[in-house]
Structure formats: C-alpha cells, structure tokens
Length: 207
Image (cartoon, rainbow, N blue to C red; front, side, top):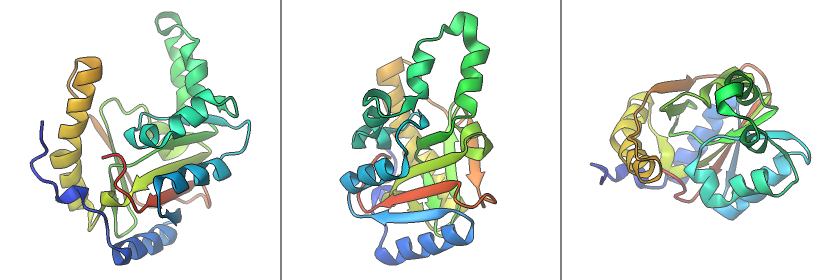
C-alpha cells in the first residue's frame, strides 16, 4: 500500500532539530544528534555497556542500522531476545512477559517526535510500551529526523496516514496479518534523569 502522503518522509531542518533537542532536554530526556546511521550505531555501542541486559523491541530502524544484530548476535550483551527464544510460549508465557517487561536496557525507535519534545510510539500489541514507559532502567531510541513533526496532532497524522500503511504492508509480507494502531504511548516528560536517550539521525531511517 502506498502511503497517502509523503511529506512525513522529509528530513527535518537543522532549526527543527535544534528546537526538538532543546525541548527534549527541558522534558528530562537526553538528545544526541548524529549525521549518519553509522554514527548512530557507534553511539549505541558507546551507550550500551558490555554485558548489559538489553532488549531490542521490534524496529525497522534498528534492523536497518545493524543494531539488532549487534545486540542479539554479537555476544557482547545479555540479549533478552535470545533468552526469550529459549522459552516455550505455551508453558512459559508468563515468564516471557515478565522478562520482556523490565529489562535493564530497552532499545527501539518512535513513530513521531514533536518539536515540543514529545515522543509518540504506536504499537499493535503494546509489548514494547511497558518497558519504554517505566519498566526498563534505561531507554535508547534511534530516530531518523524525518519523524520530527510540529505537534501532537501532526504526530497522530504521521502515525495513521504514513507509518501504519507501511507497517501494515511489512507485517502482511512477514506474518500474513494486517497491522493496527492498537495502543499508543505518549511520553511528555521523563522524571528520572538520564533514563531516556534519544539519538536523532540526520538521515531517513525507518519509517
């Protein structure tokens, strides 16, 4: 399915990025700006201590950058996904839910980031929203600057008009099932200093 609009794929200007970074800082989140996806990958490696328990949430952005593979296959980290793969869903479902809900580090992306420093994350199941909101000790989001929007209203439009059609197409190819915006997390402010780090990339990565 072709998204009905492509304006949400345009990279943010330096002025927009500057406003967003300042607003994120005012809202208790650390914001780092990098030029390329390769720079973002290096920055994640700097932020994530060797041996740390790390959970990669489902993310096209992290898949494209190789960060998913770095965490789950390099052997440098205690990967939650690797641990989950060894459990049986039929008999250990509750244990799997608990393991994914409160990792030391959770990594992923967001679907919209406003110039007022608000992060918006849409999910079909909501599995990543718990650790993003409170469960994880540390949160790292890697965000292409095309996801920066002016306000929450534009963020919702971006999610429903642009992201959902693309995610629906991706999900159907992989799972033979359509996607929905089942749940939505809006992070207005983080009260724990240093808990959330947002890496803004000046490239169009993910959707």
